[in-house]
Amino acid sequence: MLAAETELKNAEKVKMFLQKKDLLDENHLVIKELGRIFFPITKKVKVPNAKVIDANFSFPKKDKVPKIEELLKGNQINPSFPRDCGKDHDFRGS
Image 1 (cartoon, rainbow, N blue to C red):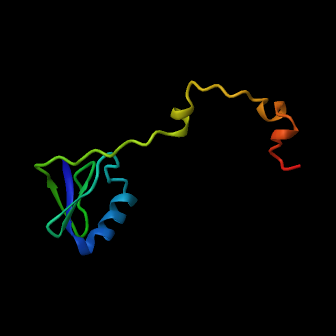
Image 2: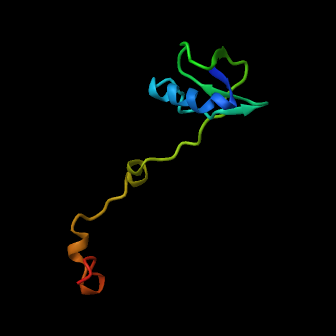
Image 3: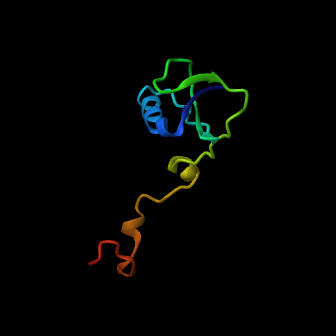
């Protein structure tokens, strides 16, 4: 996997550049080791303040947070729900 390797003092600049150019691999975590930081990237390009390497290690995968659509998939909500409630469950505060 490709990585942009840089010193910690340049990490924020490198991260901003990679995000701006849409090069940061969002599916993997960044690795920090021995005063260096390794950003997983999607393609080999010149990165200011960093050295692009072919990492001989694998980046840990990010845990995928489900989107609201995925969570609600299959759950049917009655569209007339608020109107069906009596005064005891008035959502408008009146």
